[in-house]
Length: 65
Image (cartoon, rainbow, N blue to C red; front, side, top):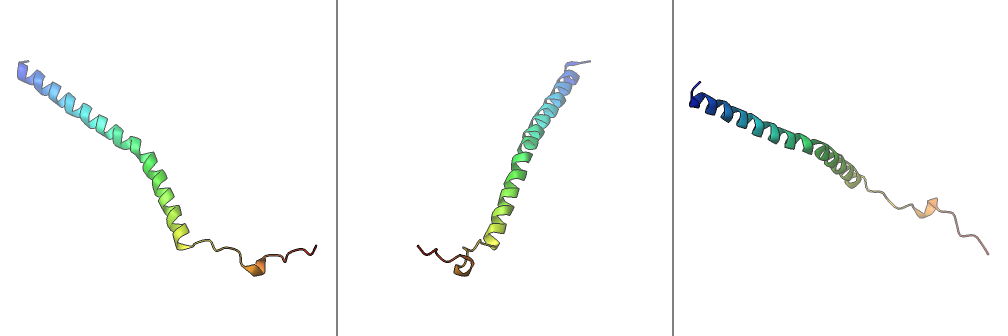
């Protein structure tokens, strides 16, 4: 084995190592992205159907003292 073959093997190992490091970083972000998407969906549902305050008909009249 000459020096070029050893250098080539080290280069391939370095590229694989960088690829795995980047893949781990992306996979670590997946749970946060899923949680954020759920919050955005809930906010969109609240925006489309706002909660209305109870009407006066639903409330009981004040008690006489």
